[in-house]
Length: 149
Image 1 (cartoon, rainbow, N blue to C red):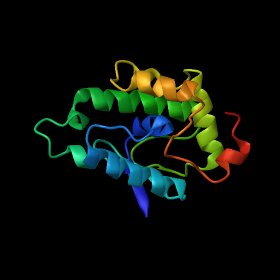
Image 2: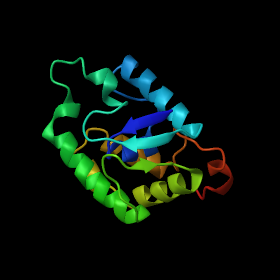
Image 3: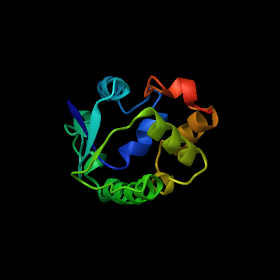
Image 4: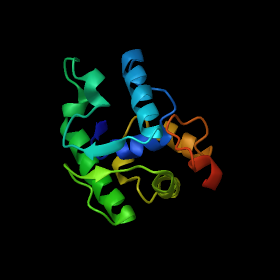
Protein backbone atom coordinates (compact mmCIF):
# COMPACT_ATOMS: atom_id res chain seq x y z
CA UNK A 1 0.00 0.00 0.00
CA UNK A 2 0.90 3.64 -0.25
CA UNK A 3 0.74 6.32 2.43
CA UNK A 4 -0.63 9.70 1.38
CA UNK A 5 1.35 12.59 2.91
CA UNK A 6 1.40 16.33 2.54
CA UNK A 7 4.86 17.89 2.20
CA UNK A 8 5.31 19.32 5.69
CA UNK A 9 4.53 15.94 7.24
CA UNK A 10 7.77 14.69 5.66
CA UNK A 11 9.44 16.84 8.32
CA UNK A 12 7.05 16.01 11.15
CA UNK A 13 7.73 12.30 10.68
CA UNK A 14 11.43 12.80 11.36
CA UNK A 15 10.85 13.61 15.03
CA UNK A 16 7.55 11.91 15.80
CA UNK A 17 7.79 10.26 19.24
CA UNK A 18 4.15 9.38 19.90
CA UNK A 19 2.75 12.73 20.98
CA UNK A 20 -0.18 14.37 19.24
CA UNK A 21 -3.49 16.17 19.37
CA UNK A 22 -5.55 13.24 20.69
CA UNK A 23 -5.27 9.53 21.42
CA UNK A 24 -7.02 8.72 18.11
CA UNK A 25 -4.62 10.99 16.23
CA UNK A 26 -1.60 9.39 17.93
CA UNK A 27 -2.83 5.84 17.30
CA UNK A 28 -3.28 6.65 13.62
CA UNK A 29 0.15 8.33 13.42
CA UNK A 30 1.76 5.32 15.16
CA UNK A 31 0.28 3.06 12.48
CA UNK A 32 1.59 5.28 9.70
CA UNK A 33 5.09 5.37 11.24
CA UNK A 34 5.03 1.59 11.53
CA UNK A 35 3.97 1.14 7.91
CA UNK A 36 6.70 3.52 6.73
CA UNK A 37 9.24 1.68 8.89
CA UNK A 38 8.28 -1.50 7.05
CA UNK A 39 9.01 0.19 3.72
CA UNK A 40 5.69 1.42 2.34
CA UNK A 41 6.11 4.24 -0.13
CA UNK A 42 4.74 7.78 0.03
CA UNK A 43 2.42 9.55 -2.39
CA UNK A 44 2.62 13.30 -1.88
CA UNK A 45 -0.74 15.05 -1.82
CA UNK A 46 -2.03 18.58 -1.61
CA UNK A 47 -4.10 19.21 1.51
CA UNK A 48 -5.21 16.75 4.18
CA UNK A 49 -3.45 13.39 4.14
CA UNK A 50 -3.46 10.11 6.06
CA UNK A 51 -2.02 11.80 9.17
CA UNK A 52 -4.69 14.52 9.10
CA UNK A 53 -7.49 11.96 8.78
CA UNK A 54 -8.26 11.84 12.52
CA UNK A 55 -8.57 15.64 12.71
CA UNK A 56 -11.06 16.19 9.90
CA UNK A 57 -14.09 15.66 12.14
CA UNK A 58 -13.16 18.67 14.29
CA UNK A 59 -15.23 21.84 13.85
CA UNK A 60 -12.31 23.77 12.29
CA UNK A 61 -9.45 21.37 11.52
CA UNK A 62 -6.12 23.15 11.38
CA UNK A 63 -5.10 20.94 8.45
CA UNK A 64 -7.49 22.94 6.25
CA UNK A 65 -6.01 26.32 7.19
CA UNK A 66 -3.83 28.40 4.92
CA UNK A 67 -0.97 28.05 7.42
CA UNK A 68 -0.80 24.28 6.77
CA UNK A 69 -0.64 24.89 3.02
CA UNK A 70 2.09 27.50 3.54
CA UNK A 71 4.06 24.95 5.59
CA UNK A 72 3.64 22.47 2.76
CA UNK A 73 5.12 24.91 0.25
CA UNK A 74 8.11 25.72 2.45
CA UNK A 75 8.77 22.07 3.29
CA UNK A 76 8.45 21.01 -0.35
CA UNK A 77 11.06 23.56 -1.42
CA UNK A 78 13.50 22.58 1.33
CA UNK A 79 13.13 18.83 0.80
CA UNK A 80 13.28 19.23 -2.97
CA UNK A 81 16.55 21.16 -2.65
CA UNK A 82 17.95 18.59 -0.23
CA UNK A 83 17.01 15.49 -2.20
CA UNK A 84 17.39 17.14 -5.64
CA UNK A 85 14.13 15.66 -6.85
CA UNK A 86 10.62 17.02 -7.34
CA UNK A 87 8.49 17.21 -4.19
CA UNK A 88 4.93 18.03 -5.27
CA UNK A 89 1.46 16.52 -5.25
CA UNK A 90 1.52 13.30 -7.24
CA UNK A 91 5.21 12.58 -6.67
CA UNK A 92 6.20 9.33 -5.00
CA UNK A 93 8.96 8.93 -2.44
CA UNK A 94 10.59 5.92 -0.83
CA UNK A 95 11.83 7.00 2.57
CA UNK A 96 14.66 4.47 2.73
CA UNK A 97 17.23 4.43 5.53
CA UNK A 98 19.76 6.59 3.66
CA UNK A 99 17.14 9.22 2.81
CA UNK A 100 15.87 9.25 6.38
CA UNK A 101 19.38 9.77 7.77
CA UNK A 102 20.03 12.55 5.23
CA UNK A 103 16.76 14.30 6.09
CA UNK A 104 17.41 14.04 9.83
CA UNK A 105 20.89 15.47 9.42
CA UNK A 106 19.45 18.40 7.46
CA UNK A 107 16.71 18.85 10.06
CA UNK A 108 19.26 18.89 12.91
CA UNK A 109 21.28 21.62 11.22
CA UNK A 110 18.19 23.70 10.41
CA UNK A 111 18.57 23.26 6.66
CA UNK A 112 14.98 22.04 6.24
CA UNK A 113 13.21 23.86 9.09
CA UNK A 114 11.62 26.90 7.39
CA UNK A 115 8.21 25.21 7.52
CA UNK A 116 8.58 24.71 11.28
CA UNK A 117 8.59 28.41 12.17
CA UNK A 118 5.63 29.18 14.41
CA UNK A 119 4.59 25.52 14.76
CA UNK A 120 3.37 24.56 18.22
CA UNK A 121 5.44 21.36 18.07
CA UNK A 122 8.72 23.03 17.04
CA UNK A 123 10.30 23.00 20.52
CA UNK A 124 9.53 19.30 20.97
CA UNK A 125 10.98 18.54 17.54
CA UNK A 126 14.14 20.49 18.40
CA UNK A 127 14.49 18.50 21.61
CA UNK A 128 14.06 15.19 19.76
CA UNK A 129 16.63 16.21 17.15
CA UNK A 130 19.08 17.32 19.86
CA UNK A 131 18.61 13.91 21.49
CA UNK A 132 19.76 12.17 18.28
CA UNK A 133 16.21 11.12 17.36
CA UNK A 134 16.02 8.69 20.27
CA UNK A 135 12.59 7.10 20.71
CA UNK A 136 11.29 8.22 17.33
CA UNK A 137 8.62 5.93 15.93
CA UNK A 138 9.89 5.99 12.34
CA UNK A 139 12.87 3.64 12.00
CA UNK A 140 14.19 1.81 8.97
CA UNK A 141 16.08 -1.49 9.48
CA UNK A 142 19.41 -0.31 8.09
CA UNK A 143 19.13 3.06 9.79
CA UNK A 144 20.48 1.91 13.14
CA UNK A 145 23.51 0.32 11.47
CA UNK A 146 24.55 3.42 9.50
CA UNK A 147 23.13 6.31 11.49
CA UNK A 148 25.69 8.79 12.82
CA UNK A 149 23.32 9.86 15.60
